[in-house]
Image 1 (cartoon, rainbow, N blue to C red):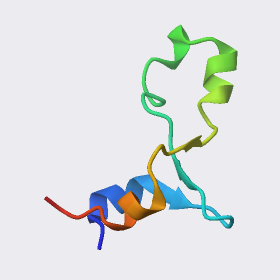
Image 2 (image 1 turned 135 degrees about the vertical axis):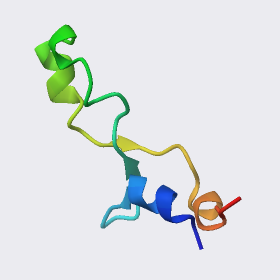
Image 3 (image 1 turned 90 degrees about the horizontal axis):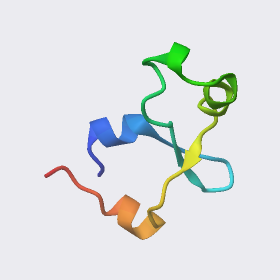
Image 4 (image 1 turned 90 degrees about the vertical axis):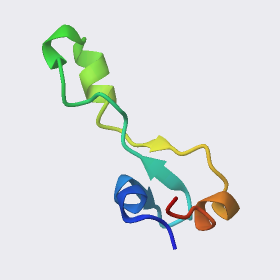
Length: 59
């Protein structure tokens, strides 16, 4: 069983990919270009194998 805080930050897609939200999206948007703000809405793949993900436990 994975920790609750970790499971809130990821999503498993229909095809089994693990995706996460991009960091630092909510702050200082006026300093970033429009392209960066648009790009920040996309989900990013998580560089973690499914085996590691399933074995992730609360420390």
